[in-house]
Image (cartoon, rainbow, N blue to C red; front, side, top):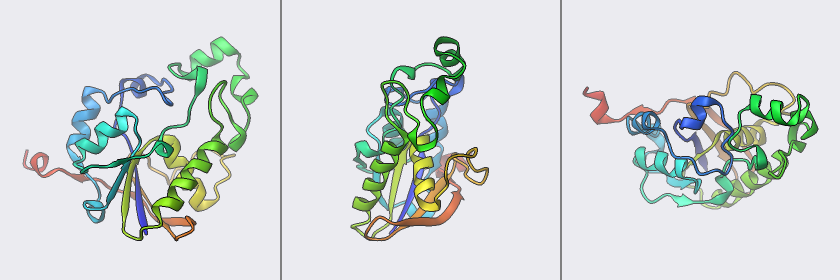
Length: 201
């Protein structure tokens, strides 16, 4: 089966660089307008829809025209614990310049009171395995961390280097998964399409 992963639209916290994690932040007015002007890539218009239960993802799914998406908590963003609501600069000022290195490296990274990157990967892998039991195409509206996890599961990226330039998180990441949940990249950076009413303007 093929599954397209999409990131939610912009929020006010995105605009100022604050970590959101599990904090339930809605789309900004600009973000909502942007997503209403788009539709999923053509092959996934009628695909099985899944969505993170966080409001920014649910608003995005609705704005994209997805019908009755199944909410799945495994698609939630990584839990950033006590760092949620803060920017990187605020964290460093409050907790020290070595705050991020003390939280662990690569998949062992775990914000204070939050969730490790390894735990995030495990739940995204479990979601993929369950979704792949049905061989029809699917689409999942989720978060940056989930897209990074899906990319890592498909490519073996060690996360020790910066996020690959080839991964454009404003577009769809399409994986192909077998019945065991093993996946590979089917297509990178698939464009969302302009909604018909917007195309006429």
